[in-house]
Amino acid sequence: MTPPVVHSLREQIREHILKGIVSGRWQPGERIVERRIAVELEVSQTPVREALRELESLRLIESAPNKGVRVRNLTATDLKESYPVRAGLERVAAELAAERLAADLSALEREVAALREADLADDGEAQVRHTVAFHREIVRAAGNSVLLHTWESLGIEVWTTLSIRWLSPEPRSYADDHQELVDAFRRRDPLIGDVLTTHVLCCAPQL
Image (cartoon, rainbow, N blue to C red; front, side, top):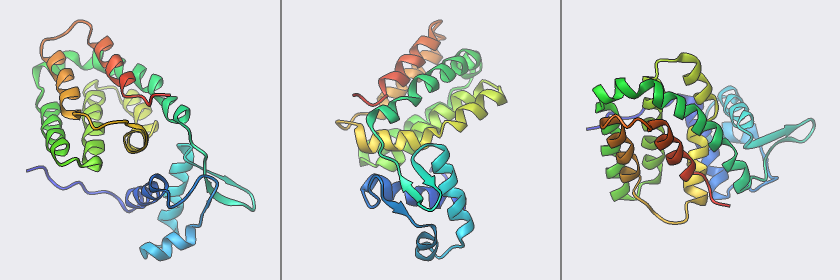
């Protein structure tokens, strides 16, 4: 059984706001009031402010003097822009981690198994969580802290959430997609960097 995922208060608030943006609770251009969220969730305004700052750094919301925080008018282009950057980082990670992962694929296989359950249940949140965890394992296996920090700073989970919830045209097997990567690492594919790049770019929102 997969252990429960424990999120910090800031992460929980960020997810709450993100869900509100994705579901249309807050429309593009609409103001998000920090104090109202704090009252609704029965928390102080400090973690709400931290969550909003993180979402602003990811360009999902914007703030202006005397106007407060508002939802940005996001387009498929906005969502797509991070994918080439992410693909470049993960290409480097895959090449650095290739031998280490070929010797021990258990972490990746665990995420694929979880994705298979999520696919069967059509559980979008679990699909996002385990997709991101799978790719994080590849980057972590590279053993390069600068690479991992840069990858994390892209807000992969947020952009993956928006891409899957907003712009994935049809249900697909995320488990099968990622099993192909596991197989490539297992056979020590000399073009693993290309394989990973193609995988990431194929997941980018279609314009």
